Length: 389
Ligand SMILES: Cc1ncc(COP(=O)(O)O)c(C=O)c1O
Image (cartoon, rainbow, N blue to C red; front, side, top):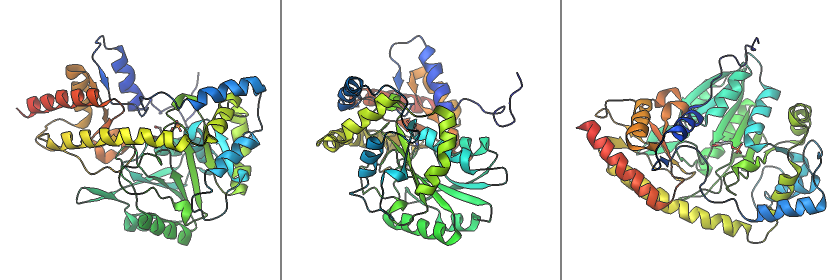
């Protein structure tokens, strides 16, 4: 079979590759801190919601953009948030996870010759989806000052040209946990507005905030396209329910492409999300989980910064930390992860998957309970001490 120029050089990402390789290892004391999947069960209302969907007979194709009641429920999630324009169901397109939203947007808007700006370290799909469409990715690193990440506003301004289509922003960030402030996002919105370009705001970790407050450029600019999902907030990555929020003209333009990909997303799961989001105590259930993640974050962050040869910037959200290996650790992030996996059965992800300049970083997803996380940190400390000698 002849493969298209678009896909022939595409490879399976390192997160999946490491996790699959580790799964095959014949040990029963492996600790997975690799994949971005919360360890807790999915929010139980989803279970009841799927059952009710069956009872009501929602087992067929739905309208292309999703069921009206579900789009209304999701639009309702923005009622308590400040937005640059009022959000209704017409601004919502339901997608198979936010991943489809990212891909669909790239498919529908990027051609060869177009450019996108990626603030790295960044979730790898921004680059992969853009390059599949032939667009050029301009990667600009966050500024790190006093161990804290800031949006590189001046560098972003300097890299915008007539080919720039949008800037991807992801706060709280995968893989660093960085949370961008209201002021930074307001400035970024001004830059986008002034240059007539869009911001693609990936908000899948919006509930995972430990320090500070979540903000979005949708508060300031109608040139924001939000991608989001229930995957992380409801611990429901397998449901594949996400959405894209944008001006209704954009939604209408995206519909034909979305239709050709899958007609419409799972009716049962759509309804289950509608059911769960309308439960009075749903946010309380989510918040209880975030408290547990905060405790885990604090433990891992402290332990990492005590290890010799490791330096970890402050993280304020998501469920990842991205420590840097100092020069006294004489191997790069990829070799570090391989050795740690084979010698100590702790599975992390090399930083290189999140940006070319992160080859000496490693990503840790603290998606296990405190006991396992302590054990993983003990093993990693021994490993690092051995490496330094
Ligand atoms: C930043 C970010 N965006 C989007 C996704 C895609 O998630 P989903 O398609 O499950 O919504 C992920 C998954 O890890 C992610 O980390």
